[in-house]
Picture 1 (cartoon, rainbow, N blue to C red):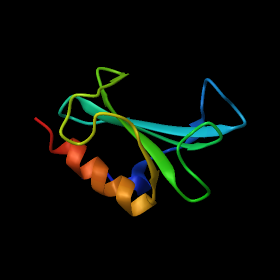
Picture 2: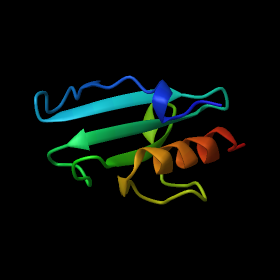
Picture 3: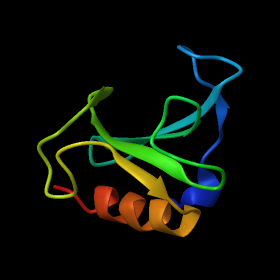
Picture 4: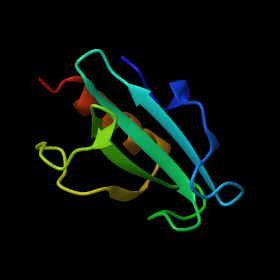
Length: 87
């Protein structure tokens, strides 16, 4: 099971220098985008996540119908686990 510690953050391609992003795809076809920085729903030490499918944000899972902001790393891990269990 992948966790927050497995994420590798890089400069966000749309707003370099102001935001970091990690993306990860899972074996079930879903994935996660995790961002931190200006223009995101987060503050220092928290993160914004989006559920991904086919490389795009998906809004049709029971996990969320939007992005989720202000998550601590352990909360990101919990959402990652939920995404990995989607079928």
